Amino acid sequence: MSWIREGELSLLERLSANILKAGPMPKHVAFIMDGNRRYARKKHVERQKGHTQGFDKLAEALRWCLNLGIHEVTVYAFSIENFKRSKEEVNGLMELAKEKFLRLLDEQENLEKHGVCIRVLGDLTLLPEDLQHVIAKAVVSTRAHTKCFLNVCFAYTSRYEIANAVREMAWGAEQGLIKSSDVSEALLSQCLYTSNSPNPDLLIRTSGEVRLSDFLLWQTSHSCIVFQSVLWPEYSFWNLCEAVLQYQLNYRSIQKARELHKEAETAQQLESDRSCVAELLRQGRNGKPIDAHSRHSALLSYTAGREERVSRFLSALQQKRDNFFEQMSSLTAVA
Image 1 (tube, rainbow, N blue to C red):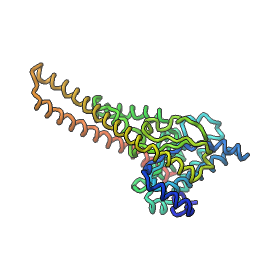
Image 2 (cartoon, one colour; image 1 turned 90 degrees about the vertical axis):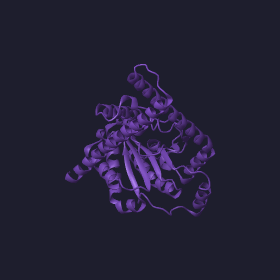
Image 3 (cartoon, helix red, strand yellow; image 1 turned 135 degrees about the horizontal axis):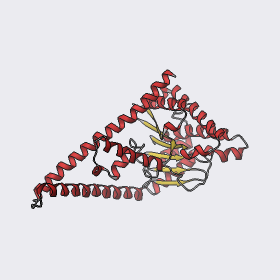
Image 4 (cartoon, rainbow, N blue to C red; image 1 turned 180 degrees about the vertical axis):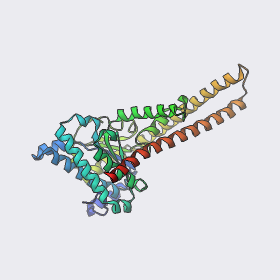
């Protein structure tokens, strides 16, 4: 089964898709693919079979998204909390993930045709080395693709991601790339694993659970969140259409909330810059009066300097992350 393929919708599905696309469409959809184990119990099959069905359903859902013009998908594949499950189940999931990533590597021509970029987000050092290598190879081999994006959250929780972003900023300060005064909400966002992606427009959780389970907590503060009762392996095109319709019904309020947050973030940064400049001027002028023109010029200079520092830091951070994947990928060839 190919992971990415167009033209598989029925006539009724194509008509419905075209009607949906007449309204505002989410550009980025995230899935909490819940219900694999309950599906296995329901069907009286082994738990591993439920997980396999779940991975296959992901391939199907990606094709639906492509047909709907949704070109970025993020999925919660494996939480750090899942390591607390039985050793047998965890090992089975690791082997299944390795098998699916190997299948992706076998589809390089198809991935290149559709321009699919694979990103894996999480602490990969928690995974078995052979899986790390296969994942890194999939990431590196599709890095240049820019048409569609599949973000797989593996060995991930949102709180771990946020804590890691704080560690990255501390690293930047230790390296002299940024100052402590450069730290902001916006900079933290750019240090998250998801920094190369826009925030999800729509987050879908299946199985009837109505919680986020530590998934994209920072990124979905202004997203449409839809909880659906269907188990993930039984998810259908119509379930996805229902969720998209919920997004469309709430589109205006979502956009308004995002605009207000952006305005507040900009105002907060400006106030921070002004505070830093005022302190610097007080130190340099020894209490002498400062005219408005001097304050404005100093603010422009400080802002330009901060933006340059932040840009330099983010480039170094991206290089550090790229190097990790490249090293893991090269080890694959040796192994």
